[in-house]
Length: 270
Image (tube, rainbow, N blue to C red; front, side, top):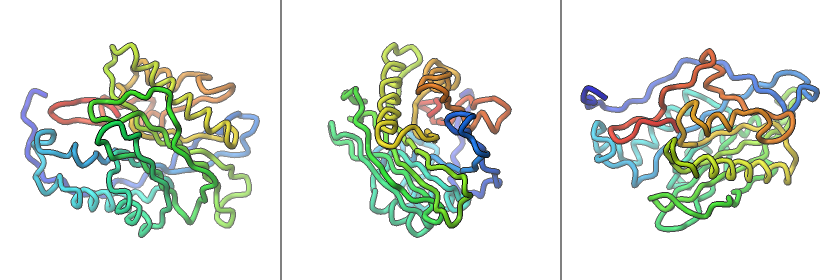
């Protein structure tokens, strides 16, 4: 923050190959062996957010939606993830078509239309590995919206392994893709909104198919190790014998990042 941000031309890159994380099932008594899954989650930014005033260090061409979609495609090809969760998706048709060419099927849901907000969330899965038995956008309890007219949104999808390529003991699981509104750490209502939103999503999953293992991804708009984060990873917040763990923390010796979202207006973790 003490020196000017250099003007750089955004470029695609091929990240180092990462080994997929291991993730626990609901209870140790049910675990028949560790299962492996790779998940990528990107907030690709709504079109009206990608403007020079927000990102003065990017060229006009780099901010154009076609350029950003091309970079996203190349990044996702490099990652080759089993599951892809996207937020702030505006052009559902173009994104769905792009993902289809890479072997993914998926579902898209928009934020409730309070104003001119037209973006939403999308969850995709490798068709070679999974099928979807159920999906829905969860009606969340707080109908208020942010300054862009967006409400909180939670999308859930029940995925089942394709038996021809999976192990015998592979279980179905849930993917919950959320986009929650930004709030400051001192906002007393922030943690209450997050609790209500996530509990609604988990209740919807439990009512539909039962509480299978859950992959929770998306935009939380919280600071690492703050009260909202601590509540999300707290013991038994979503039911008996069930606890969420941070994938980033799992891979980085128990440490969370200082921030994952940065421009000259905002330094935050989403």
